[in-house]
Image (cartoon, rainbow, N blue to C red; front, side, top):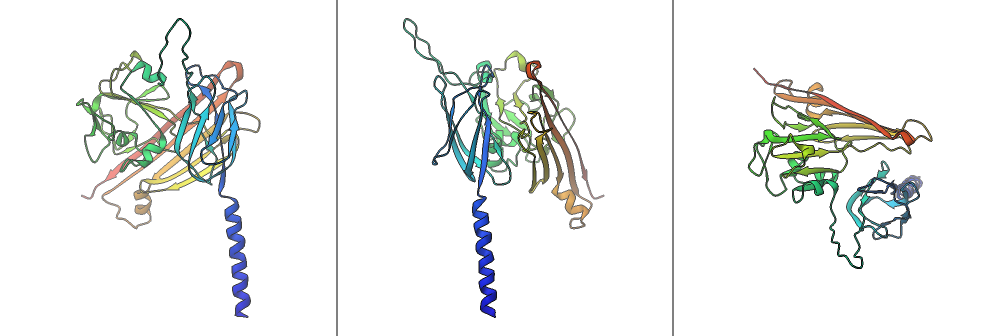
Length: 332
């Protein structure tokens, strides 16, 4: 009788292992655009390095890579007449589709009778040569003690140091932290941080969740007129769009707090999408559960969203916003 139970248990374990193994892949998709003209690129080849998985972008720049093994993967994007792009150490998870939107820059060719020299650079680098550093969301997660905070991550760059261990204030090339300018989707933001002091550019925790951020730029000097209100540096932050193909939900728990995110299309067949994220501090939850004392605690919560509305020839419209509440309770 005992042997029958053991056999049954082993049978179900094998079924579970088989079912789990079949789900260790994910879909990776995105849109390829000309980085300067912002027009879709057709015929570009996207390869998952180390595998035989590849795809070709269509007339709208869309590509889909099916059955990509989960884990950290490297991708290569190539198109005749454009510089090759390599995306390294990109995390592919089983919980949700991965959307990547790499921009390609046109390659400058030598012509008879004229010599033209070019180098690979972003639009912002052309405006601020030698002082712009693009960074990804993954970098804010990989750097030690960055805790998904762009300011803390920037202290790993040359000429940047932290001004205060308790806050994310940074000193850029000897300039005061107050001279840092924050821009989100091109809009000036006074201070996108929790536990911030009036008149400063930093705080204890960034209000921008990693669930919402896209690849962004950090500038340390030689600003163009677009950033005329900056003295020491500029964070030019961009937000990613939600998945416009299917609805997805994300739950994430960490030292800072819990993240709840929802994204997807507004309706089937429409390319518009929504992305909403809510976050609540871990310490606040532990205090409410009476695991931690109510006095001497810091709590915060924030809500952010990004809505995209493609309107054909009329253009693309987006609505975004974020807000938060934070407080510190000290024992008398």
